[in-house]
Structure formats: structure tokens, C-alpha cells
Image (cartoon, rainbow, N blue to C red; front, top):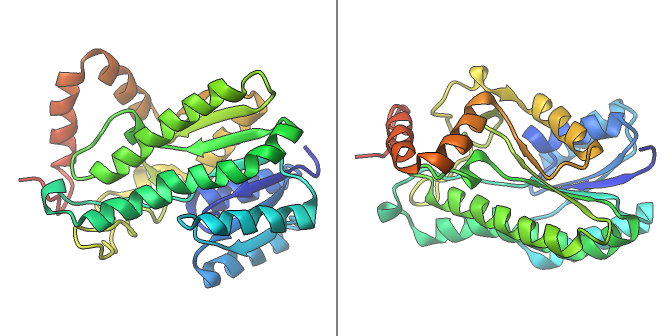
Length: 268
């Protein structure tokens, strides 16, 4: 795996940052992106301290042209792309009836179209390297949750997109993995958008009891090595996916009751 190049969108925190460190320590050269320059520089310094050869690029995944520039700069520096990890994401928490549709669009632009754009521009190089595409989805891509309609829609869309793409390229040597973490300790809930687009600022759940971003990154690394098709994480997540296939109506009730226990939940 020495000298392989991996692009990681949203690589400045959470699962993305953890992937940069895990893959970097294994010999990959990460190219990380992020919208916040300070966070990007901070993560870049961490990778430098770990003696990981990398490239840090400020980019907004919801803007198509920035993906073209990202790929061009990656090729200029490293000459190839062996893997793309579509990690950049945002969530929301509000009832759909109260939700500003601009918030819905923003979530789709980042979570879904960001993955579509990155994959489109990286694909020619991944076909050459017979590399891997990883989509960081969610259990929400298998089981919808109330007050997170936009987030759920973006993850279902991502799952469908990568399933179709996998079928297109499976005879051309490109590996496609969809990773679906369960609840993971990160900043995603603190940065969740509310009905009017403002940031939630605090997590409604106990982050200390969740799977760590580092554990998720290690699981993704192992799944890529084995060129697995799907990765569903946490016992709770696996159970939710299984039960939703067989007793979906019952799972509607279970999911509602579980989410209704969140502090400050908007359910009525």
C-alpha cells in the first residue's frame, strides 16, 4: 500500500480525519479537503507530525468546479489516484413540516451531490489504477429516522448511486464499498442544522457511549483491504438494518419511540 494516493473529502475532523491518519500510517498519501481553513491547517500539522506525506486543499464539496480543481491538484502533486473516500457530510434535526427547504437542499448538495461530483472527476483515474471508491453512508441510509428527513434522503440516495455505479464498473476492476456507521462520536450532531438553517451547537446524545471515529476508520481500512461490498457497523446498527427488512412497521414504532427520548427532540 506504500505510495497509494487517497482523496478524503471532509478530512479535517471525525471519521475523515481518522481515515487520513489510519490510511496515512499504512503508507497511503492522503489528500484531505475541508471548508474551514483553520481546521484544515490544524489537521495538516497533525499529519506532518505523524510524518505522513499529504496534501491539504480547501474545498466545498457542494461546488462542482472545486472537485475538478481538487483532482487536477492531486494529479499534479502525486500523479495518480488510488482511492476516493466520500466522507464530507452534514446532518439536520427538525420536523419536515417546519423545515426551510433551503436546508433540505444544502444537506443534499453536501452529502449526495458532493459524493457524485467527487466520484465523477476521480473515476477516470480510479479506472486506470483499478482502485477503490468508499461512500461513508449511515444506518440512516437503510432506516429512516424522524426529524432527519433530509439526512435520511441523502444517505438513501448515496446508497442507490453507489449500488448502480458498482454494477457498472465491477468488471473493470474498480471496487466500491458503502460503509454505514452507527452512532459515532464526532462533531456532526453539534453542527446539525435546525429548521431555519442555524447550527444546533450541542449534541442531543451521549457521545461518550458511541463508537469512536478511529474505530470506524480502522474498520473501513480492513474492509477496503478485503474489497468488501458493504460495511454496517455497531450491533445496534446491524440489528436496525436486519429488523427493518423483516418487520418494517414494527421498526417505525421502535424508531419513533427511540428518537422521541432525545433531549429537546422536535417530535410532537
